[in-house]
Structure formats: structure tokens, C-alpha cells
Image (cartoon, rainbow, N blue to C red; front, side, top):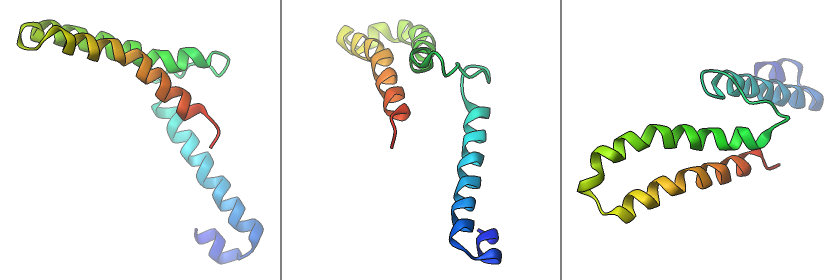
Length: 97
């Protein structure tokens, strides 16, 4: 914002917005994907399915230890909804705003 105040002009305001969006994009690039690897833009289905698969793999061992403490419908509802819901969330995040 300091650049906007120093130069003061409509084009400078848009330039500051572009700087902010590129900074946010770089931050997402550093944090995206498993182990820092970001799935390619050529395969967006993989980018939306991968987090669900990782969550499913992480939660299955935990649910095995909790299997007798909760009813079967609880485990099935939770585990079977992980991939579709993360896929839907990934599609919503990719949609143009």
C-alpha cells in the first residue's frame, strides 16, 4: 500500500493489487501439494482428488482403533465422505470467483 500512497494514481492501485495477488499465488505454490509438490494444471482432477486420498489414508488407522467405540454408520459416513467432499471443495476453489 505504500507504493499507492507514494505515486498516487489509479494505475498504481491496480499494480498494488497485482503485487498482492502474485504474492498470494507464490504463498499457495509453496504450501500446495503433498510434500511441497503441486499437481500440474494439466490434471486438475488429480489436484482435487489427492487431498481426499491423503486424508482417507491418514484416518483409516485411527478409525480401526476406534471401531468398537462408535456405530458402524459413523465410520462409514466419515470415511466414505472424505474423498467426495474434498473433491467438491477443490472444484469450488478452482471455480472462477
